[in-house]
Length: 470
Image 1 (cartoon, rainbow, N blue to C red):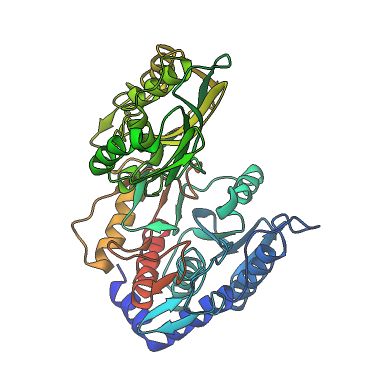
Image 2: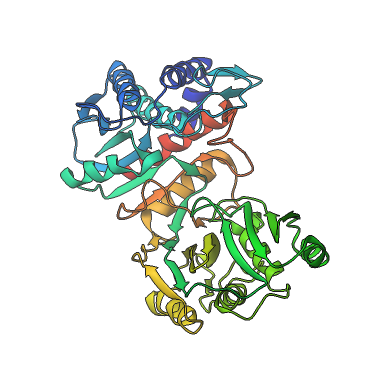
C-alpha cells in the first residue's frame, strides 16, 4: 500500500539532501559517554546529541519531550501509541586509524563516513525521515508512532531501563540498530566464573603462572604461561606440532630455570567464536603434551584441556551442547583464565538457543566442572532467550515491508548470539539498518553507511509504520 508514493518521495533528490544534512548535524556532536554531571547522567556529549536530535525533530514538526536527558521522544501524532522505534545517539570512541575526521560526516562515492553514520545516528534519522514522509504525504494512520532516542546504548542501556520504569511498553517495538531483514531471536547468555585452589607446590616441571584473555565477550587473542623446570628445547617440538594443528603460533623463550610460552590466537566476538582462534585453548593444548609433574596444578590444567578442548565452540566436552532449527547452536567461548602458585580462575561466555534451559545448561555445566574438582565461584543468572515468533504480526509485517522495497525475497528472520536494544522489551525485534552483505565498520575506523541503502531503509520504515499503525 502506498508504494508508489513512498518511492517517489525518497527518490526525490531533496530527500537525499535532507537525509545527509540531518545525519551530518548529529555526527558533528561527539557523544561518547563521559562522567555524569548534574542533569547529564551520561556526560555532556550524549546530552548534547540528544538536544540536537530533539531540535531536529521539533524543526520537522514533531512533538518532542526530553526525559531527564536519558531518552528523548518524538511523536508523529496525538493518537494512542502503537509502535515504539528505539534508536540511540551515543557512540563509541573514535579510536585511531581514520582517513577522515570521525566527527565530520563526509560523503564520498555514495558512502557516508563518520562515527555514528551506521551506529546509530544514521538509522535514527532514517526513522525520523519515515515519520516526516508519512506526515507530508498525508498517509492515514489510526495510531501514533513514537521514536525513542536513547543516550546509553553503548554502555549498558540504562537509558531505556529508566524510560520504561516510568512509561508503558507499546504493543509493537523495533530498533533500527542491527541488521535486515528482522532479528526475532536473541540467544540467552550464561557466563559463570569458576576455579580451584590448592596448597603451595614444589614439584617440577610445573606451570607457575598463566594468564589469557581480556574481556568476557571476546575470543582471547593472547595467552601465556611460565613453566618452571623445562627448557625451550623441551617445548619447541610440541609447540610446532600444536601450532600446525591449531594455527595458534607459539613464542618460547628461556627465563632462568623457567620457560615462557606465548600463544597468539585471533580475536572475534564471543557471539561468533568460530571466527576466532582461542589462545587459551591453544595454550592448554600445548601444556597437555608437555612432561609436567604430577601435581594439582597439572591436574587442573589437564581438566581444563579436557573440558575446553581447542575448537570446541559448542560446549560438547562440557556436556551443554544444544541446537535447534529455530535459533541455531549454543556457542561457547573460554574467555578468561589466570593461574598462580595456589590456584586458578576462569570464565566463559555462552550464548544459548531456545532448546537450552537451566537443567541442560547451567546445572549440566556445574556437574561437569564438579567431576574435575572445579567449583563455580560467581554464578550469574542465565539471561533469558528473547524470542518473537516468526509468524507474529510484527515480524510478518516487517518482513513484508523489507521484501517490498529491498527486492530480497530469499532472506528469513534471523537469530543472533548478541543482544540488541530490545532484548528486554516484550515483543520487540531488531529491524535494520544494515543490509545483507554490507560491512558498516561499526566501532571501527572509517565507520560507513551507503546512502542508497539508507534511503531504502527510509522507504522500508515508512511502509512498516503505515502497515502497523494504519
